[in-house]
Image (cartoon, rainbow, N blue to C red; front, top):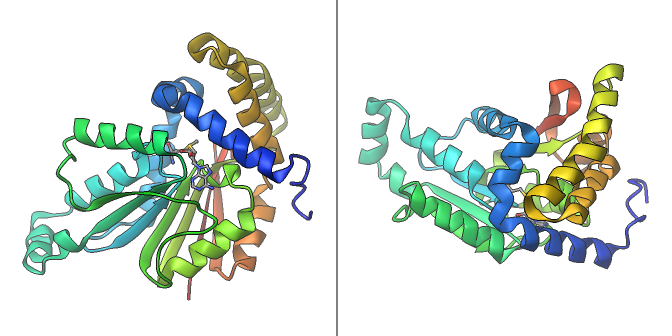
Length: 261
Ligand code: SAM
């Protein structure tokens, strides 16, 4: 295909992704911290500050697994000024806020729900956990103010379908934001990054969770994912306007965004 994706057969890919996340679910947080040196936290903060969440919003976080992005959105909404909070409260906006966390893997959702309880969000009515596929979302057309997907779209079998679904469920004026591991171009950084991802990541995977293969797969999936410009084109092809991206740490990750007009 135009995206060079057929190398891994499609069913094989979906199955592999399922297996990987079932195996890594319980160690997911630890591995994220180890492999990114804690940086994934800052990247997610950045994603959410770009989103600019507001009380009363309807938001969909796809591939939201462990709730990392959803918790940040909620915390941000809850930390708005007292006055804004009072106004929002009077207008019942806080109760109307809905953050849907959608993930294809129930194990990841379970981890997320457990973490929600640990963070004091057990009674939080704004958080809604939904099992579902990014390629065929169970949400109405034009129903969401925002859509985020963090470290998720790389694992989806048909990226174009996921983008089309994101476009469909967003309201006009709604914002699409994607955080994903991307491509490094700077020569020396690239050499270091290659060394790190091909040698260190699978080794850490083996050492910490006894699973080299899953992490090998993750590294390969990064290589196969479209480059920043190409992915921006795909987002625009799905119908989004004002498509932009920002590379962080020289391209180790990128945040892409688009608006539905
Ligand atoms: N967003 C979380 C974060 O940033 O910590 C989790 C990212 S995790 C690397 C990728 C998640 O994508 C997994 O929870 C996996 O189950 C989910 N996933 C994979 N394919 C999916 C699909 N087609 N639809 C929805 N979720 C999917």
